[in-house]
Length: 196
Image (cartoon, rainbow, N blue to C red):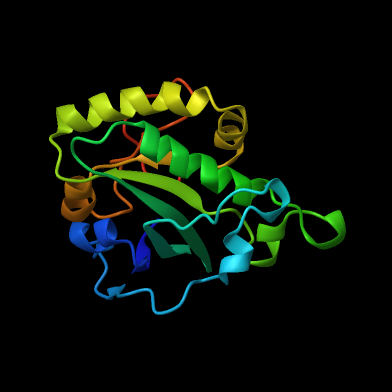
């Protein structure tokens, strides 16, 4: 499934800018990457209002346009950066904040609030930055139990595709390549974004 266009929208988080989130699609001549001039959704939509939680603000949003036979598919991922020498708790906390967005009820309790913004909830992508492959595997091995001990997050990870991929692998092979490691389930082999 070729990816025609990838857009990376970094949010104002300094660590997102420092990581240089300009990713290219594999086999794609068109590249659209730039600063996130305005949020895809107003902040009130990203607030865990029904749970009283803080606003979820991902480090970046990655958007794909993929060609499937005669149709096009739009895919999104919320990107969280894992910086060297940081433990797994900050990332697990950010993923838990995304859970509040995922669980937030829609108007009058009908459906979920995010359904007004997207057809499917964006995938979650944890990107270890500036790490060796071995360091990234160690960090992700620690992230899985940290995520699983949070009941809401563990439940969401059974419904929302989530994975981890090193920034260096994404830049070298492209975001559609089989470089993602699932955060949920028993599977540990790298896969592409459609297999999460």
